[in-house]
Length: 431
Image (tube, rainbow, N blue to C red; front, side, top):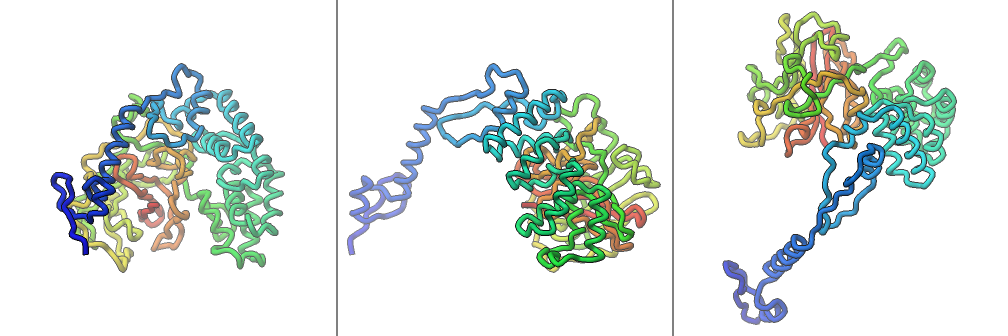
Protein backbone atom coordinates (compact mmCIF):
# COMPACT_ATOMS: atom_id res chain seq x y z
CA UNK A 1 0.00 0.00 0.00
CA UNK A 2 1.38 3.42 -0.97
CA UNK A 3 2.45 5.64 1.90
CA UNK A 4 0.09 8.59 2.39
CA UNK A 5 1.55 12.06 2.63
CA UNK A 6 0.21 15.09 4.53
CA UNK A 7 -1.83 17.77 2.75
CA UNK A 8 0.22 20.94 2.12
CA UNK A 9 -2.62 23.25 3.19
CA UNK A 10 -1.73 24.99 6.43
CA UNK A 11 -3.89 23.71 9.27
CA UNK A 12 -5.20 20.69 7.34
CA UNK A 13 -4.57 17.33 9.04
CA UNK A 14 -5.63 15.16 6.08
CA UNK A 15 -3.31 12.79 4.31
CA UNK A 16 -3.45 11.88 0.62
CA UNK A 17 -2.08 9.33 -1.79
CA UNK A 18 0.94 10.31 -3.90
CA UNK A 19 -1.19 9.93 -7.05
CA UNK A 20 -3.68 12.46 -5.66
CA UNK A 21 -0.84 14.81 -4.68
CA UNK A 22 0.49 14.67 -8.23
CA UNK A 23 -2.91 15.80 -9.57
CA UNK A 24 -3.63 18.50 -7.02
CA UNK A 25 -0.21 19.92 -6.29
CA UNK A 26 0.01 18.29 -2.89
CA UNK A 27 -3.33 19.22 -1.38
CA UNK A 28 -6.29 17.02 -0.51
CA UNK A 29 -9.47 17.09 -2.59
CA UNK A 30 -11.55 19.06 -0.04
CA UNK A 31 -8.84 21.73 0.09
CA UNK A 32 -8.62 21.80 -3.70
CA UNK A 33 -12.39 22.19 -3.95
CA UNK A 34 -12.30 25.04 -1.43
CA UNK A 35 -9.50 26.67 -3.41
CA UNK A 36 -11.57 26.45 -6.60
CA UNK A 37 -14.61 27.87 -4.76
CA UNK A 38 -12.58 30.83 -3.47
CA UNK A 39 -11.18 31.51 -6.92
CA UNK A 40 -14.69 31.44 -8.41
CA UNK A 41 -16.02 33.74 -5.71
CA UNK A 42 -13.14 36.18 -6.24
CA UNK A 43 -13.85 36.19 -9.98
CA UNK A 44 -17.56 36.84 -9.36
CA UNK A 45 -16.86 39.72 -6.97
CA UNK A 46 -14.38 41.24 -9.40
CA UNK A 47 -16.64 41.01 -12.46
CA UNK A 48 -20.12 41.33 -10.96
CA UNK A 49 -22.13 44.26 -12.30
CA UNK A 50 -25.18 45.99 -10.91
CA UNK A 51 -28.23 46.17 -13.17
CA UNK A 52 -31.24 48.40 -12.53
CA UNK A 53 -34.06 47.23 -14.78
CA UNK A 54 -36.27 50.05 -13.47
CA UNK A 55 -33.94 52.91 -14.31
CA UNK A 56 -35.91 55.70 -15.97
CA UNK A 57 -39.27 53.93 -15.52
CA UNK A 58 -42.12 55.86 -13.91
CA UNK A 59 -45.16 54.21 -15.48
CA UNK A 60 -46.49 51.60 -13.00
CA UNK A 61 -47.60 49.40 -15.91
CA UNK A 62 -44.07 49.23 -17.31
CA UNK A 63 -42.67 48.63 -13.83
CA UNK A 64 -45.06 45.72 -13.23
CA UNK A 65 -44.23 44.22 -16.61
CA UNK A 66 -40.56 44.16 -15.62
CA UNK A 67 -41.42 42.65 -12.23
CA UNK A 68 -43.38 39.81 -13.83
CA UNK A 69 -40.64 38.73 -16.24
CA UNK A 70 -38.83 35.69 -14.80
CA UNK A 71 -35.10 36.17 -14.25
CA UNK A 72 -32.52 33.48 -14.83
CA UNK A 73 -29.95 33.38 -12.05
CA UNK A 74 -26.61 34.87 -13.06
CA UNK A 75 -23.96 35.23 -10.33
CA UNK A 76 -22.32 38.02 -12.33
CA UNK A 77 -25.44 40.21 -12.20
CA UNK A 78 -26.77 41.92 -9.10
CA UNK A 79 -30.25 43.31 -9.75
CA UNK A 80 -31.49 46.45 -8.01
CA UNK A 81 -34.80 45.91 -6.23
CA UNK A 82 -37.63 48.34 -6.87
CA UNK A 83 -38.39 50.39 -3.71
CA UNK A 84 -42.03 49.22 -3.61
CA UNK A 85 -43.35 45.68 -3.63
CA UNK A 86 -45.41 44.24 -6.45
CA UNK A 87 -48.52 44.08 -4.28
CA UNK A 88 -48.12 47.73 -3.22
CA UNK A 89 -48.03 48.81 -6.84
CA UNK A 90 -51.09 46.75 -7.73
CA UNK A 91 -53.08 48.26 -4.86
CA UNK A 92 -52.13 51.79 -5.99
CA UNK A 93 -53.18 51.31 -9.63
CA UNK A 94 -56.07 53.34 -10.99
CA UNK A 95 -58.98 51.46 -12.54
CA UNK A 96 -57.71 52.42 -15.99
CA UNK A 97 -54.20 51.15 -15.21
CA UNK A 98 -55.60 47.89 -13.83
CA UNK A 99 -57.51 47.54 -17.09
CA UNK A 100 -54.25 47.88 -18.99
CA UNK A 101 -52.72 45.08 -16.93
CA UNK A 102 -55.72 42.87 -17.65
CA UNK A 103 -55.36 43.57 -21.37
CA UNK A 104 -51.64 42.75 -21.14
CA UNK A 105 -52.42 39.44 -19.42
CA UNK A 106 -54.81 38.53 -22.24
CA UNK A 107 -52.09 39.34 -24.77
CA UNK A 108 -49.70 37.07 -22.89
CA UNK A 109 -52.27 34.26 -23.02
CA UNK A 110 -52.60 34.72 -26.77
CA UNK A 111 -48.81 34.55 -27.06
CA UNK A 112 -48.69 31.31 -25.06
CA UNK A 113 -47.05 32.86 -21.98
CA UNK A 114 -49.46 31.26 -19.54
CA UNK A 115 -47.37 31.42 -16.35
CA UNK A 116 -46.78 35.18 -16.53
CA UNK A 117 -50.41 35.83 -17.47
CA UNK A 118 -51.59 33.72 -14.53
CA UNK A 119 -49.52 35.73 -12.05
CA UNK A 120 -50.92 39.02 -13.37
CA UNK A 121 -54.51 37.76 -13.21
CA UNK A 122 -53.98 36.45 -9.67
CA UNK A 123 -52.55 39.79 -8.59
CA UNK A 124 -55.54 41.68 -10.01
CA UNK A 125 -58.00 39.32 -8.32
CA UNK A 126 -56.29 39.01 -4.93
CA UNK A 127 -54.76 42.43 -4.33
CA UNK A 128 -57.54 44.46 -5.94
CA UNK A 129 -60.61 42.18 -6.11
CA UNK A 130 -60.91 43.12 -9.79
CA UNK A 131 -63.32 41.46 -12.19
CA UNK A 132 -61.27 39.58 -14.81
CA UNK A 133 -64.23 37.80 -16.43
CA UNK A 134 -63.19 38.85 -19.92
CA UNK A 135 -60.09 36.66 -19.60
CA UNK A 136 -61.92 33.57 -18.35
CA UNK A 137 -62.97 32.17 -21.78
CA UNK A 138 -59.31 32.15 -22.79
CA UNK A 139 -58.38 30.26 -19.61
CA UNK A 140 -61.04 27.67 -20.38
CA UNK A 141 -59.81 27.34 -23.99
CA UNK A 142 -56.39 26.43 -22.60
CA UNK A 143 -57.77 24.10 -19.88
CA UNK A 144 -56.35 26.46 -17.25
CA UNK A 145 -58.69 25.64 -14.39
CA UNK A 146 -56.21 26.51 -11.66
CA UNK A 147 -55.90 28.69 -9.61
CA UNK A 148 -59.63 28.31 -9.09
CA UNK A 149 -60.02 31.72 -7.40
CA UNK A 150 -59.62 33.37 -10.82
CA UNK A 151 -63.13 32.22 -11.70
CA UNK A 152 -64.92 33.73 -8.69
CA UNK A 153 -66.74 36.36 -10.82
CA UNK A 154 -67.72 33.99 -13.63
CA UNK A 155 -70.73 34.75 -15.77
CA UNK A 156 -73.90 32.68 -15.68
CA UNK A 157 -72.89 31.11 -19.00
CA UNK A 158 -69.53 29.95 -17.66
CA UNK A 159 -71.11 28.65 -14.46
CA UNK A 160 -73.62 26.60 -16.44
CA UNK A 161 -70.89 25.26 -18.70
CA UNK A 162 -68.79 24.16 -15.73
CA UNK A 163 -71.76 22.57 -13.95
CA UNK A 164 -72.24 20.40 -17.02
CA UNK A 165 -68.53 19.73 -17.48
CA UNK A 166 -68.03 18.53 -13.91
CA UNK A 167 -70.35 15.60 -14.66
CA UNK A 168 -68.07 14.10 -17.36
CA UNK A 169 -64.59 15.63 -17.00
CA UNK A 170 -62.77 13.12 -14.79
CA UNK A 171 -59.38 14.78 -15.36
CA UNK A 172 -60.39 18.27 -14.19
CA UNK A 173 -63.21 17.50 -11.77
CA UNK A 174 -61.28 18.52 -8.63
CA UNK A 175 -60.43 21.92 -10.10
CA UNK A 176 -63.95 22.37 -11.46
CA UNK A 177 -65.49 21.74 -8.05
CA UNK A 178 -63.13 24.31 -6.54
CA UNK A 179 -64.09 26.81 -9.23
CA UNK A 180 -67.78 26.22 -8.55
CA UNK A 181 -67.11 26.78 -4.86
CA UNK A 182 -65.53 30.15 -5.60
CA UNK A 183 -68.50 31.09 -7.80
CA UNK A 184 -70.75 30.01 -4.93
CA UNK A 185 -73.99 31.58 -6.18
CA UNK A 186 -77.50 30.30 -5.42
CA UNK A 187 -77.43 27.82 -8.29
CA UNK A 188 -74.10 26.36 -7.16
CA UNK A 189 -75.38 26.07 -3.59
CA UNK A 190 -78.51 24.31 -4.87
CA UNK A 191 -76.43 21.90 -6.93
CA UNK A 192 -74.11 21.10 -3.99
CA UNK A 193 -77.19 20.29 -1.91
CA UNK A 194 -78.47 17.98 -4.67
CA UNK A 195 -75.14 16.19 -4.80
CA UNK A 196 -75.21 15.78 -1.03
CA UNK A 197 -78.72 14.32 -1.05
CA UNK A 198 -78.23 12.26 -4.24
CA UNK A 199 -74.49 11.58 -4.72
CA UNK A 200 -73.61 11.04 -8.40
CA UNK A 201 -71.55 8.04 -9.37
CA UNK A 202 -68.38 10.11 -9.85
CA UNK A 203 -68.35 11.02 -6.14
CA UNK A 204 -66.62 7.68 -5.59
CA UNK A 205 -63.56 9.14 -7.35
CA UNK A 206 -63.27 12.00 -4.84
CA UNK A 207 -61.54 11.94 -1.47
CA UNK A 208 -64.27 14.14 0.09
CA UNK A 209 -67.89 14.93 -0.72
CA UNK A 210 -68.48 17.72 -3.29
CA UNK A 211 -69.85 20.19 -0.72
CA UNK A 212 -66.60 20.03 1.28
CA UNK A 213 -64.89 21.88 -1.58
CA UNK A 214 -66.82 24.98 -0.50
CA UNK A 215 -64.44 25.38 2.44
CA UNK A 216 -61.68 26.51 0.09
CA UNK A 217 -63.85 29.49 -0.85
CA UNK A 218 -64.70 30.43 2.74
CA UNK A 219 -68.22 29.00 3.14
CA UNK A 220 -69.99 25.74 3.85
CA UNK A 221 -73.22 24.06 2.93
CA UNK A 222 -75.26 24.20 6.13
CA UNK A 223 -77.55 21.37 7.27
CA UNK A 224 -80.56 23.31 5.95
CA UNK A 225 -79.03 23.44 2.46
CA UNK A 226 -78.13 27.13 2.63
CA UNK A 227 -74.76 28.82 2.28
CA UNK A 228 -73.13 29.64 5.62
CA UNK A 229 -70.26 32.14 5.58
CA UNK A 230 -67.07 31.20 7.43
CA UNK A 231 -65.10 34.40 6.80
CA UNK A 232 -65.61 38.15 7.03
CA UNK A 233 -65.29 40.30 3.92
CA UNK A 234 -63.83 43.09 6.07
CA UNK A 235 -60.08 42.53 6.05
CA UNK A 236 -57.31 44.49 7.79
CA UNK A 237 -53.59 43.86 7.54
CA UNK A 238 -51.41 43.09 10.56
CA UNK A 239 -47.95 44.56 10.06
CA UNK A 240 -44.81 45.48 11.95
CA UNK A 241 -45.21 48.88 13.58
CA UNK A 242 -42.39 50.41 11.53
CA UNK A 243 -43.97 49.33 8.23
CA UNK A 244 -44.31 52.60 6.33
CA UNK A 245 -47.16 51.38 4.13
CA UNK A 246 -49.54 51.59 7.10
CA UNK A 247 -49.29 55.36 7.19
CA UNK A 248 -49.71 57.69 10.14
CA UNK A 249 -53.36 56.74 10.55
CA UNK A 250 -52.63 53.25 11.93
CA UNK A 251 -54.30 52.65 15.28
CA UNK A 252 -52.06 50.88 17.76
CA UNK A 253 -54.71 50.61 20.51
CA UNK A 254 -57.36 48.79 18.48
CA UNK A 255 -55.53 45.48 18.65
CA UNK A 256 -52.44 44.00 20.28
CA UNK A 257 -50.63 40.92 19.08
CA UNK A 258 -48.19 38.30 20.34
CA UNK A 259 -48.23 38.92 24.07
CA UNK A 260 -47.19 36.40 26.69
CA UNK A 261 -50.15 35.14 28.72
CA UNK A 262 -50.20 34.64 32.48
CA UNK A 263 -51.61 31.14 31.89
CA UNK A 264 -49.67 28.02 31.06
CA UNK A 265 -50.06 25.31 28.46
CA UNK A 266 -51.32 22.18 30.17
CA UNK A 267 -49.24 20.01 27.87
CA UNK A 268 -45.74 21.55 27.92
CA UNK A 269 -46.30 23.90 30.91
CA UNK A 270 -44.86 26.88 29.03
CA UNK A 271 -46.58 30.25 28.99
CA UNK A 272 -49.37 30.56 26.45
CA UNK A 273 -49.18 33.21 23.75
CA UNK A 274 -52.02 35.67 23.17
CA UNK A 275 -51.99 35.83 19.38
CA UNK A 276 -54.54 38.64 19.29
CA UNK A 277 -56.26 40.94 21.79
CA UNK A 278 -58.66 43.16 19.82
CA UNK A 279 -61.54 45.56 20.34
CA UNK A 280 -64.72 43.70 19.38
CA UNK A 281 -66.26 46.88 17.91
CA UNK A 282 -63.60 47.00 15.20
CA UNK A 283 -65.18 46.55 11.73
CA UNK A 284 -63.32 43.27 11.19
CA UNK A 285 -64.96 41.77 14.32
CA UNK A 286 -68.18 43.74 14.88
CA UNK A 287 -70.21 41.36 12.69
CA UNK A 288 -69.68 38.63 15.32
CA UNK A 289 -71.88 40.48 17.81
CA UNK A 290 -69.75 39.52 20.80
CA UNK A 291 -70.94 40.76 24.19
CA UNK A 292 -67.43 41.41 25.45
CA UNK A 293 -65.22 44.48 24.99
CA UNK A 294 -62.14 42.67 23.73
CA UNK A 295 -61.55 39.35 22.04
CA UNK A 296 -58.46 37.42 23.07
CA UNK A 297 -57.22 34.40 21.13
CA UNK A 298 -54.56 32.38 22.94
CA UNK A 299 -52.59 29.28 22.02
CA UNK A 300 -49.39 27.47 22.83
CA UNK A 301 -46.82 28.68 20.35
CA UNK A 302 -45.03 25.33 20.62
CA UNK A 303 -47.71 22.65 21.00
CA UNK A 304 -50.13 24.48 18.69
CA UNK A 305 -48.20 23.18 15.69
CA UNK A 306 -49.24 19.62 16.54
CA UNK A 307 -52.90 19.91 17.43
CA UNK A 308 -55.87 22.27 17.34
CA UNK A 309 -56.01 24.15 20.65
CA UNK A 310 -59.35 25.35 22.02
CA UNK A 311 -59.82 28.10 24.60
CA UNK A 312 -63.07 28.94 26.39
CA UNK A 313 -63.86 32.60 27.02
CA UNK A 314 -65.01 33.37 30.55
CA UNK A 315 -67.50 36.11 31.46
CA UNK A 316 -64.76 38.74 31.21
CA UNK A 317 -63.57 37.44 27.86
CA UNK A 318 -60.41 35.87 29.30
CA UNK A 319 -59.31 32.70 27.49
CA UNK A 320 -59.24 29.56 29.63
CA UNK A 321 -57.71 26.24 28.59
CA UNK A 322 -60.55 24.10 27.26
CA UNK A 323 -61.49 20.75 28.74
CA UNK A 324 -61.99 19.56 25.15
CA UNK A 325 -58.32 19.83 24.20
CA UNK A 326 -56.87 16.46 23.28
CA UNK A 327 -53.15 16.04 23.74
CA UNK A 328 -51.52 14.72 20.57
CA UNK A 329 -49.69 11.41 20.62
CA UNK A 330 -46.41 13.17 19.90
CA UNK A 331 -44.93 16.39 21.25
CA UNK A 332 -41.20 17.25 21.00
CA UNK A 333 -38.98 17.84 23.99
CA UNK A 334 -38.59 21.57 23.59
CA UNK A 335 -35.18 23.16 24.06
CA UNK A 336 -35.35 26.43 25.98
CA UNK A 337 -33.26 28.03 23.23
CA UNK A 338 -35.39 26.85 20.33
CA UNK A 339 -36.84 30.25 19.36
CA UNK A 340 -34.78 32.89 17.57
CA UNK A 341 -37.27 35.66 18.35
CA UNK A 342 -39.44 35.98 21.46
CA UNK A 343 -42.96 37.25 20.98
CA UNK A 344 -42.45 40.23 23.28
CA UNK A 345 -39.79 41.56 20.89
CA UNK A 346 -42.28 41.72 18.01
CA UNK A 347 -44.34 44.90 17.74
CA UNK A 348 -47.33 44.60 15.45
CA UNK A 349 -50.22 46.88 14.63
CA UNK A 350 -53.46 46.77 12.65
CA UNK A 351 -53.80 48.82 9.47
CA UNK A 352 -56.24 51.70 9.57
CA UNK A 353 -57.77 50.96 6.16
CA UNK A 354 -59.16 47.63 4.89
CA UNK A 355 -57.79 45.86 1.87
CA UNK A 356 -59.17 43.22 -0.48
CA UNK A 357 -60.67 40.22 1.34
CA UNK A 358 -58.75 38.06 -1.17
CA UNK A 359 -55.45 39.84 -0.55
CA UNK A 360 -53.76 36.83 1.07
CA UNK A 361 -56.02 34.09 -0.28
CA UNK A 362 -53.27 32.70 -2.52
CA UNK A 363 -50.40 31.66 -0.29
CA UNK A 364 -47.95 31.22 -3.17
CA UNK A 365 -47.99 34.92 -4.07
CA UNK A 366 -45.41 37.24 -2.50
CA UNK A 367 -47.57 39.29 -0.13
CA UNK A 368 -47.46 39.32 3.65
CA UNK A 369 -50.31 37.18 4.97
CA UNK A 370 -51.01 38.35 8.54
CA UNK A 371 -54.50 39.84 8.82
CA UNK A 372 -57.83 39.98 10.62
CA UNK A 373 -60.75 38.97 8.41
CA UNK A 374 -60.62 38.07 4.75
CA UNK A 375 -59.84 34.69 3.26
CA UNK A 376 -57.20 32.51 4.94
CA UNK A 377 -53.89 31.75 3.24
CA UNK A 378 -54.18 27.98 3.35
CA UNK A 379 -50.75 26.40 3.07
CA UNK A 380 -52.40 22.99 2.94
CA UNK A 381 -56.12 22.12 2.61
CA UNK A 382 -58.78 24.40 4.07
CA UNK A 383 -59.43 23.29 7.65
CA UNK A 384 -62.12 25.05 9.67
CA UNK A 385 -62.25 23.26 13.06
CA UNK A 386 -65.56 22.08 14.49
CA UNK A 387 -66.67 23.55 17.79
CA UNK A 388 -66.37 20.74 20.37
CA UNK A 389 -69.60 21.91 22.02
CA UNK A 390 -72.06 22.31 19.13
CA UNK A 391 -70.09 20.47 16.38
CA UNK A 392 -70.60 23.43 14.02
CA UNK A 393 -67.66 24.66 11.99
CA UNK A 394 -66.02 27.66 13.60
CA UNK A 395 -65.65 30.97 11.77
CA UNK A 396 -62.29 32.35 10.72
CA UNK A 397 -61.08 35.42 12.65
CA UNK A 398 -57.61 36.03 11.32
CA UNK A 399 -54.09 34.69 10.92
CA UNK A 400 -50.48 35.40 11.81
CA UNK A 401 -47.73 34.35 9.43
CA UNK A 402 -44.45 33.92 11.30
CA UNK A 403 -42.48 34.75 8.13
CA UNK A 404 -43.95 38.28 8.17
CA UNK A 405 -41.96 39.32 11.22
CA UNK A 406 -39.20 36.74 11.73
CA UNK A 407 -36.67 36.21 8.94
CA UNK A 408 -36.20 32.63 10.10
CA UNK A 409 -39.88 32.02 10.80
CA UNK A 410 -42.33 29.94 8.81
CA UNK A 411 -45.87 28.68 9.12
CA UNK A 412 -49.21 30.34 9.80
CA UNK A 413 -51.37 30.31 12.93
CA UNK A 414 -55.08 30.50 12.03
CA UNK A 415 -57.66 31.80 14.54
CA UNK A 416 -61.34 30.76 14.75
CA UNK A 417 -64.36 31.35 16.97
CA UNK A 418 -67.75 29.87 17.83
CA UNK A 419 -69.74 32.81 19.17
CA UNK A 420 -72.59 30.65 20.47
CA UNK A 421 -70.32 28.66 22.78
CA UNK A 422 -67.73 31.42 23.35
CA UNK A 423 -64.98 29.12 22.15
CA UNK A 424 -61.84 30.03 20.18
CA UNK A 425 -59.53 27.69 18.33
CA UNK A 426 -56.14 27.88 16.68
CA UNK A 427 -54.43 25.59 14.22
CA UNK A 428 -51.14 25.77 12.41
CA UNK A 429 -49.96 24.92 8.90
CA UNK A 430 -46.59 25.12 7.22
CA UNK A 431 -45.10 23.94 3.96
